[in-house]
Each structure stands twice: as C-alpha cells, then as structure tokens.
Amino acid sequence: MGAVLPVVLGFALFWWLGQFDALLVSKAHDDLIIARQYLRRIMERGDEQIAALGQSTAFAEAARSGRLDTLLEERRKALGLDFLYVTAADGAILAASPAGAEPSGNARWRVVGAALGGKPETAIDLFDADAMDAVSPGLAARARLDLVPTTAAAETDRTVETRGLVIHSASPAPLPDRGGGALVGGSLLNGNLGFVDTLNDLIYAHADLPGGSQGTATLFLDDVRVATNVRLFGNRRALGTRVSKEVRDAVLGQGRLWLDSAFVVNDRYISAYEPVADSTGQRVGMLYVGFLERPFRLARWAMVAAVVAAFALAALVTVPFLLRLARAIFKPLERMNRTIAAVDAGDLGARTGTVSSQDEIGLVARRFDELLDRLQARDAELRAFARELDARVEERTRQLEETRRQLVMSEKLASIGEITAGVAHEINNPIAVIQGNLEVAREALGPAADEVRTEFDLIDQQVHRVNMIVTRLLQFARPDEYAGYVETVMPADVVTDCLVLVRHLLERAAIVIEKEDIATRTVEVSRTELQQVAINLMVNAIHAMPEGGRLRLRTRDEDRSGIEGVAIEVADTGVGIPADRLRKIFDPFFTTRTHGGTGLGLSISYTLIARYGGAITVESALERGSTFVIWLPAVRRPN
Image 1: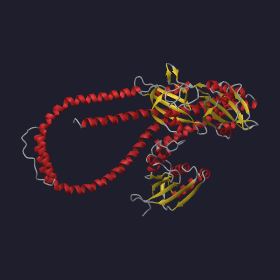
Image 2: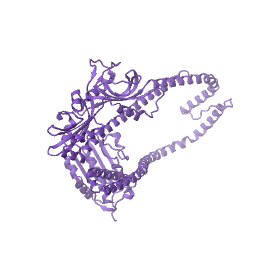
Image 3: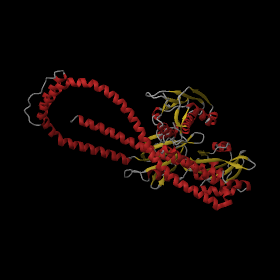
C-alpha cells in the first residue's frame, strides 16, 4: 500500500491535470470558433447591405437623376461605413462618399474586380495610408498607431503602424449608359473597440471563469494589436502592443492555429489564435481570444494539494488497522491458495480441510470445499454444455448486432422526427403572419407598392424558401402523411426519367453517363418518391465531381436474405466520403457540404425506402468515389 497507492495516485493526478489542461484548450478553441463566426457574420452583413443598396430602386433612380453623391452620403452614414463609392467598368469614379474622397485603382482590389465581373464579394483587405486617405480623408489618421515595446515580441525597427485593416465589400450595380459598374464600401477595423467589446461580451459575458480570470479578444494587423480589450495598465487598452514571437512565427509564419498558453502583453493567457487572410489569400493579421491562466493554475494546484493531503490522512488512519486484520487472513488464505493450485493442476479431489476459525474466512473455507465438491460433479456437464452454448452464442450475437443497429437508426429517426415536427409547426405560424401582412401592405400601398417591388419580391422569395424547408422537415418528421400513390414500376424507367430532370446539372459539370439496365423485376412503390430518392443520390454524386467525371447508373436483380428484389446503383468518381463520416451520412441534419444543404436528403431517402421494406447502402473511398445502392423487394410473381 505504501508503494503502490502513491504511484496510482500520481498517475491519476497526472491524467487529471492533463485532462484539465485539455479542457482549457478546448474552451479556448470553442471561443475562437465563436469569434470567427462573429467576424464572418459582420462581413456577410456588409456584403448583404452593399448588395441590397446596389440593386435597390433608390440607387437606380439616383443613377438616372445624377444624385448618386447625395444617396451615397445618406446610406454610408446609415450603414456606419467609412467609405462608399461607385465605379464604372473603365475605372471612372462616378460618385463617392464622404466628400473629398478620390478612390482609384479598381484593378488593385480583387473584390472590386469580382463585382465588375458580376459577382458580389467581401474580404478583409490591407490598405496603406495613401489608399485610406483616397477613399476617406482622415481615415489614415484614425488607423495610425504608435508601436509600444512589448515583452517577448519579435525585434523590429518600426515605431508606428500606418496601415489599416478594412472590411472591403463590392457588389455589381446597374449604371445607365455606362455598362456594368460596382458599388464599393468598407469599414476600418483599426481602433474598432465596439467590435472587440461586442465579441468579448458574446463569448465571456456569462462564462463560468474562476475569480480573478478575465476573457479577452483582439484583432491583429500583422503582429500589432489594432483592436483589443487587453489592458496595458489601468483602463488603457494595449493598442499598438505586439504579439509574442513564438505565436507570430506559428500563426503568421506557418499559417496554423495556436491553441496553448501564450504570453499576452504582461501575463500568460490560455490563448487561441488563427490567421486572417485578405482577398488574395495572403496572411495579413490574426484573430485572438483567451482568458487569464493564473487563476486556473492556482485552482489546479490547490486541488492537487487537497487530494494529496486527504490521501495521506486516510493512509495514516487505515494502514495500522489493515495490517492487523491481514494477519488473521493470511494463513487460511494460504491453505486455500494451495488447494486452488492443486485443482488448477488437475487434482479436482484437493480440499482445504478443517479451518479452526469461525469467522468469515473459516466460513469461506468450508463453503469453498463444498463448492469444489459440486464443481467436480458438474465438470462433465459443463464441458458438454459449453460446446452447445458456443454455437448458440455465436448465432444470437449476430442477430443481436443486426437488431441493435436497426433499433439505433429507428430511435434516431423517431427522436429527430418529433423535434423537427415541432420546429416546423412553430415556423409555419410566423411565416403565415409574414405572408398575410405582406399582402395587406401591398393592398394598402396600392400603386405606390411598385417602388418597393424588388424588396417585396425578395421577401416573397425568402418566405417561399422557408416554406420549402418546413415542407422538407415535415416530410422527414411525418413521412406517412406525404406518402405518394403506390404503383408497380420498372426501376429502369424511373432512372431514365430522373436523367432528364438532372440533365442541366450534368451538362454544366462535364459528367459522362454510364447506364446499364439489366433488371427484369418490378417493385411496388410511389413512383414520385422513388424518383425523389434517385434524384437526390444523383445530385449528391454531381456535387462530388465538381471537375467532372463518370456517373454510373445500373439496375439489376438482387436477392437479399432469401427475398427477391431489385437494386438501383448510383456510383460516382468524385472526392469520396471519409470513413469517420460514412457511418453518419444517414443521420438527420448531417451533411458533408461546406455550403448549402440541410442534411435531410439522405435521411428522408432512407426513411422512404425503409417504409417499403427496402434499404440504402453505401461504399466509398477518398479520391475514388462513392457507390450508393437502393434495394427494394420485388413484386411477387404468381405461381
């Protein structure tokens, strides 16, 4: 006990401390994800605002009447932008806000070039002082920061930072008699304390941090803090201070995440850093969140001290008593141990014999001899039973595993179905209110509604989009209510019809079709629902081959578990599905796409096919493609 238990305690504490540190790093990583999403949302909002203004009726009217300067000034102030201007395709600046701005050089900015090409785009770009003063007089002065000597930072000869990080948005804008144009706007992030304070409140306002710890957030230009709530001393923010050299080399130099303890201005923080890239993909800064490490370190060592003290006290009290108790146990146990050794060697007639003690050890010794008597009598029976039991266990194990897999999938679908049905119901009510009030607004405005026709049409489109999502949710939650008319169909005919419906996607993606129909059996299903499943698999295959490839469609007769059936195979030569995601693809709301998709397509398809007694299986390998097989029981032929 004196040797082993301290070792066990040491390993337990070592493991616990490791888990403690891992949890801290995991929290910092989660906080960084929130910060990244918040920054991305700000950029998306800027993109939406610029795009909405460029496509608005007011912009078109101002462009025709020559009042673009007045409109841009009003909208720039309302949107909180630092600059806003309109450029023609030939680079001419048609209007700009604020007054005195003289932006130029459309070819320099990738977002402007994209907008002139017809595609709205938003990015974080690095502006030098001349570029900032060109788009907004005085903006360079706002961005200027004196560098503050910082402990552990990389050596530098610079004493001032004159560049600025700008959320840069551009969107196509119609220009009468000038061809295509672009509406360009941006906001300076240097000194934007509202951004970091809101971000800090979003992450740490209700965080459960130990007393004395505090959460911080920072935006860096290169390695210089240009927006931060880290304090240098008192209430002075650490603007102009620089990140430590080890973090700079890892994040800006190598482009990787930093998830570890790091020195921040004047103390160590559990930190998370990630690089910030401009529109060309160059790393121009970093995004940081973290919290003070010292309170966690003190709490950790206080816990270690308490555990060690409790262990020492427990050992001091219990060890003497246990040693005295052990003496009365050792001798009978040694006799029992010799008996066990003899039985183990094959002598089933070996016994412990009479034990003088009448305590629990003596009782155990006597019962042990009785047990050996019964053991000897039943040994032959057990050997016979063992052979039979092995065969039964093997069969039952196989059946149990198959049943467990089906139950898990059924429970998942049932649980998510109940949730999604409730969510869909709650969404339908406000959507109905929006549609009703939109019609009231149209009737109340009468002819005046034409001025905001674009906005009303946009609302109609988004309401229709929400209705479609709700319909898919209800189709998943209550598949029986959306079941189609069951009829006898040839799978090959369904595949042919589906090819017509996805032909435009195939031509756009340069995909070659390989089709083979050798199935002779028919199935009883809803033709519409089978088309829905097949089209979903085809569209997924097309998305998996953005650079083109081969889409193989086969129908064949296939028997499973003694049941006649038909298999429809949809195979692609796309990117494939990683093994760790393959087992989740039929889970509701799980999707491998980075943009778009609700994660319900395969779940609904699985539910539809399962309702007809069928199944969907998949095989996939990275960079080699995926193969989905729909199997349905065939219509029984009359004898």
